[in-house]
Length: 338
Image (cartoon, rainbow, N blue to C red; front, side):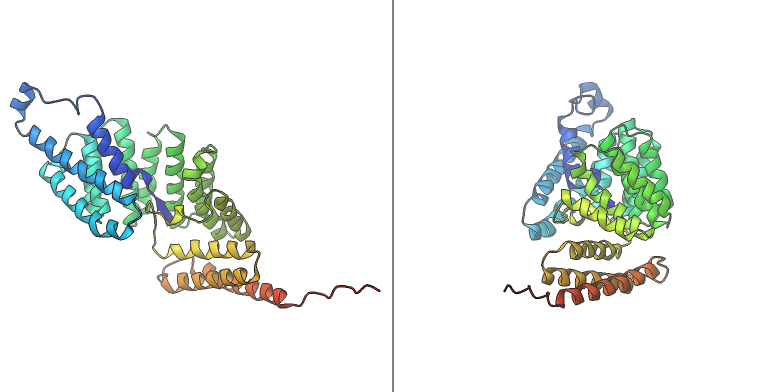
C-alpha cells in the first residue's frame, strides 16, 4: 500500500502561499483603521505570514531544481524558519483556513505528524467553507496513513469525497482510500476503489493521476491472486511513465515502508517478461527475486502478505530458471541447401 499526496506536497505549499497573497477578498484586504483598533497585532501577523510564505516559495523552487543535495541540506532550514514565523503569527488558532492548512503542511513535511493532525482537527472544528474542509479532510487522511490509523483514514476520505466535486481530485481520493483498504486486508474493496478512481479519469488526467493508480491496482490484483492481471496493469502504467518516475517521486510514500519491495518485485518481473535481450531479462529476474527476498526479510511478524510473497518468490525463481534454460538451448541448425 502506498500514498500519494500532491495536494499536500511542496507544490501545494507554493500554491496555497501564492493564493493567500494574490486572492482578493476579505482575507487579503488591507486592514482598516477600525480593524486595526480591534486587533492591533493584525499587521504584524500578516507580515510574519508573508515572510514565511516567501520561504515556502523559495522551498518549492529549490525542490524543482536538479540539486537534490541542496534540497536536503537547505530545504528543512527554510521550513523550520517558516514554522517559527507561522507560530509567532498564531497560525495554529488562526481563523484563516488557508493559514492553518499551510501550517499543517509545514508540520507534516518536518515530520511532526501529530502536530499536523491537531492543527487539521482544530480547523475542522471551526467548520470552515467546504473547499477548505475538503482539503483539511484530505490532509488529515494522509496524516492518519502515516500514523497507521487506517480506519480513521478511510473515514476521512469519505468526508473529503462528500465535499470534492472535481473528477481528478476525486480519483486521487478514491485511489488513496483503496490503499487504506489494502492495508486492512480488504482486497475486494481495494480493487473496487482503484477501478472507481480510474473510471473518473480522462485521457489527459491519466498522466498525472492514473499511473500511480494503475500501480496500486496492479499490487491489489496480485494480492487477490491475479498475478497476470497485476503485471498487465504495470505494463499499462509504463505506457504513460516508462521510467517509473511517479512512484519514485516526492509526492509518493509507502505505508508500511517495506511495501516498496512489493512494487519493485512486480516491476522487475514485468520488465523481465518484456525484455528483448537475454542478459536484460536475466538481470530483471534477479532483481525481482532480490526484491521478494527483501520484502520477506523486512516484513514484521504480523504481516499477512508474507506467505504470498514467499510463494511469489518461488514462482519467480522457477520462471527465471525455465526462461534461462530456454535461452541457453542452442538454436536449431538451419537446413543446408543442396
